[in-house]
Image (spheres, rainbow, N blue to C red):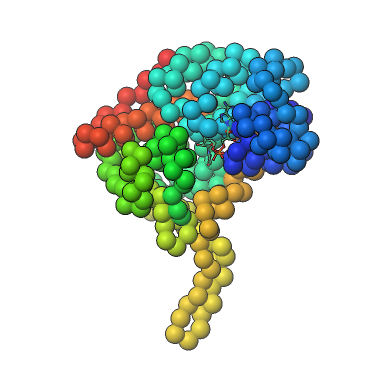
Length: 334
Ligand SMILES: NC(=O)c1ccc[n+]([C@@H]2O[C@H](COP(=O)([O-])OP(=O)(O)OC[C@H]3O[C@@H](n4cnc5c(N)ncnc54)[C@H](O)[C@@H]3O)[C@@H](O)[C@H]2O)c1
């Protein structure tokens, strides 16, 4: 039984709390949030203890692993404390808003044999995992174009935008990770074109809401990511792996695959209302994989080092956005 302590009882903290609580080999025992009321409400639902001082979690022999699900600007400090306490970590993406703080955590983690898993939930979508596995097994030959699309459905609250690190670090980071995970190689060059087309308040907050990112891989293959914070028709996410002998597609998902054909029209189900509804199942699969890996099963998890790689793509993508030039991606390691 893995006894978890959770940091952050906000939106995603509640999702992970539920999946840990429902897992037969895991238990949520402690919750800490600076918003004590949020911690109390969540703890009451899962039978956990509210902790007043986060240091008590790191010092406790009754905590086997921590889940860091608080706001992004708190991740580095919590990661550092958990690494010093030698507690296995599940940490939500991205590692931090600031690359220097990310590097400081990397330096601390270097050489330690501690599981530190990053919340790249898309890897646990059954269709994406199958597409990745079949491409890597050689079913369609050599990669030429990897197309990753994620749109909508509506922009997050401005309060979230301001602490998110910006669209490329917050949303696109999932697809930076997917690109390297699917291709099996990390991009060496990135060019970004961005715009604020959805909500002027996002532009006033210094962010973009529409992004096209083009990347080159060492093999010569190309990656294109298109992200929008809005899609007027619901949440739209899909992947195409286009290669020398064919294509693997993990297509856009609708609420149902049933279509009605009548005279003059074809009716099909709507798209999912939001990103969460689209990938909700993958969060449970992810926690299950993490728990099983802590129990010794050999499962490839997205690691801190994958998070560092994705974050360095995001930094280069921002540099490209600002300079309007392609930028080489340097992968710094401690
Ligand atoms: N993997 C995914 O698909 C995914 C989806 C959503 C969010 N996220 C990530 O999860 C994190 C949280 O996002 P959210 O949507 O749940 O935000 P949220 O604002 O709903 O919740 C954040 C919570 O953290 C708490 N908090 C702030 N400082 C804290 C601290 N020092 N210690 C403990 N708790 C603290 C806040 O009080 C709040 O309850 C972000 O890093 C975000 O990027 C990942």
